[in-house]
Image 1 (spheres, rainbow, N blue to C red):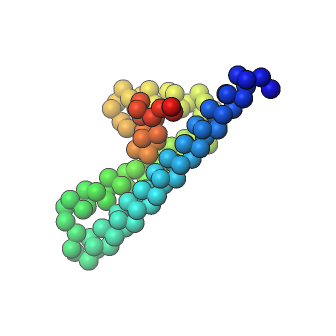
Image 2 (spheres, rainbow, N blue to C red):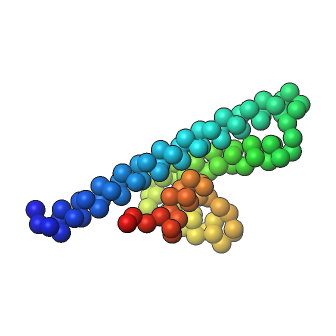
Image 3 (cartoon, helix red, strand yellow):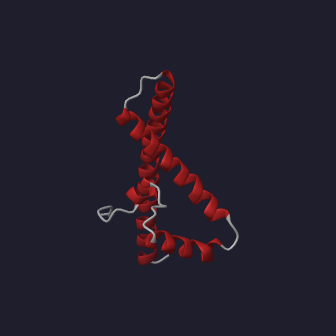
Length: 113
């Protein structure tokens, strides 16, 4: 294997490792937020949840539904054709379909050095 190939695989393995570490951290955060959401809904049923807590729980529920919706869209037949159309229409109508955890993975300041 030539030097360029070795260097490419080294960079690729670093990218993969950083993605896996970041993905694991994002999943831990999501898990904590989901537990907090469930606690807020239990407090709501008991009648002791504040409006701020309910706003947080509702926002977290929206993120969960976005994840489910995105997963369903990906497994549909012809998704490589329909997904770009759906996302362009959503952008025109100012509908956010992308979950926050995915947006955090594609920040411009995430660069491998």
